[in-house]
Amino acid sequence: MRLVEITTENYEAALALTVRPDQQDLVEPVVHSLAEAYVYGARAWPRLIYDGDEPVGFVMAFLDFAWGAVDPQPEDLRSGLWRLNIAADAQGRGYGTFAVDQVCSMIAARGGTRAYVTYEPRDGGPGPFYRRLGFVPTGEFSEDQVVAVRDL
Image (tube, rainbow, N blue to C red; front, side, top):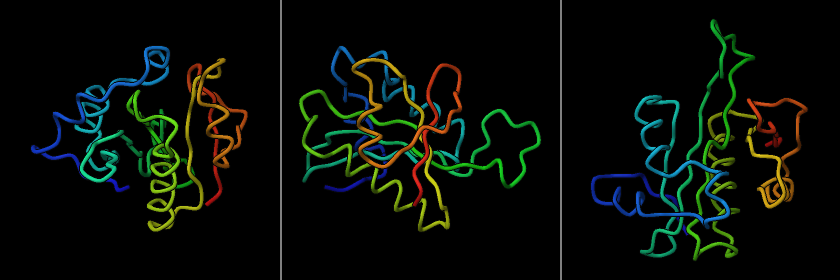
């Protein structure tokens, strides 16, 4: 497994990735994420997840970002997992765990000590998955999503 930068050669494969129908309300489609990556520039870190030569998912991190802060202070800056889309037919094979661990390792290599994630708190949602990976809810909400943190 590996993470690969999105380029002119593989962006169509990224756009073709879709999650299961029952998950479509939990995560934005890849095209939406790539538009955000363009707008947020250096703060977004989008990657395709490959198994060999096959793209099996998409992950995007956010780096040193202060959500909603008008005049952010250093303590307001956070990094973490912004999006995770695993193709419907590739789920349950460890790709999501691999991608989250890679994002956390990248954040730690940049000097980060925590990784954040937000998720929809509903039955069938990703909360149990993130808890298994060491994310703990902070008690905060971002709109209607739970904010969770993992010490690195």
